Amino acid sequence: MLGNSQTDGESLQTNKDSLSAVYSGPSIKLCSHGSF
Image (tube, rainbow, N blue to C red; front, top):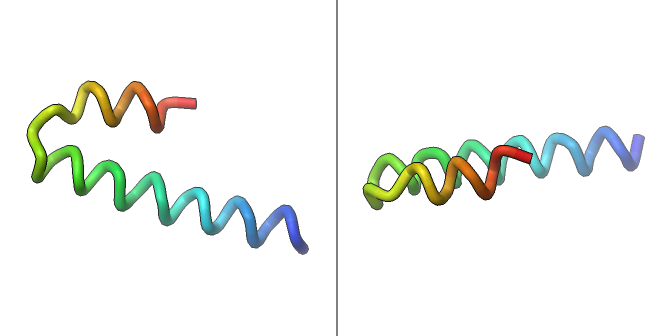
């Protein structure tokens, strides 16, 4: 359950990063960071 919760949190963070990248511009840098 703990692992699942962590995965959910990471998914949310990745989604936020993706949106931030689209709004910021340098999505490549963020994409590279959220790739792994």
